[in-house]
Structure formats: structure tokens, C-alpha cells
Amino acid sequence: MAIDFENLIKSIVVPLVHHPEDVLVKTLSAESGELTIQVLVNEEDLGRVIGKGGRIASAIRTIVYAGASKEGKHVRIDIDAF
Image 1: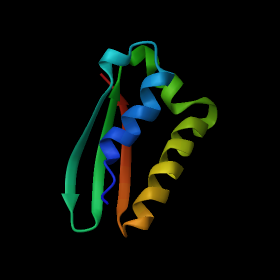
Image 2: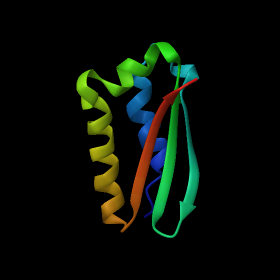
Image 3: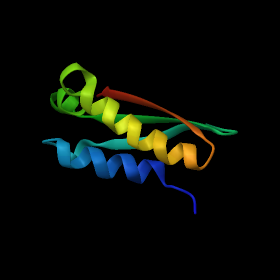
Image 4: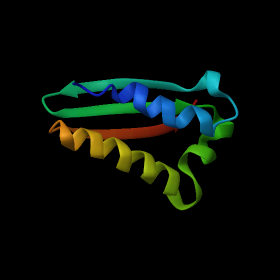
């Protein structure tokens, strides 16, 4: 069973932000065993997603990396605002 990383990340990020309608999660590249996923949020919500000292971003990455390792993949997550 393949993990839908976009849906997983979106389900984690949406409850954290004030503007959930502005959350955009998309896969930029999906090469053999390596995924690059971009998370775009409203500029006002960027601090909420990154967290103090990057703790929330680190926690999101840890959850996604755990799922990716079960499938033998490597996931890179870019968090940015628009």
C-alpha cells in the first residue's frame, strides 16, 4: 500500500494554520526512490508551520520520513510562503 505523502502532509499542516484554504502541497519531482514535496502556505502562517526553532517543521519531516523509510524512499520537504 503506497502512502499518499501529499495528503499526509496536508492533513498535518491544515489544522496548524489560520488560512487553511491557502495550503498547497505538491510533488515537484518523483525520481527513483526520491520525492521532493513543496508546501506553500499563506505568509502569515509560515511561522506556525515552521515553529519556534523549526520544531514543528522537524516533527512533520520526522513523520513523513518514517513513512517513506517503510517504502524505501527518501522525501525532501520544502516549506515556503506565497
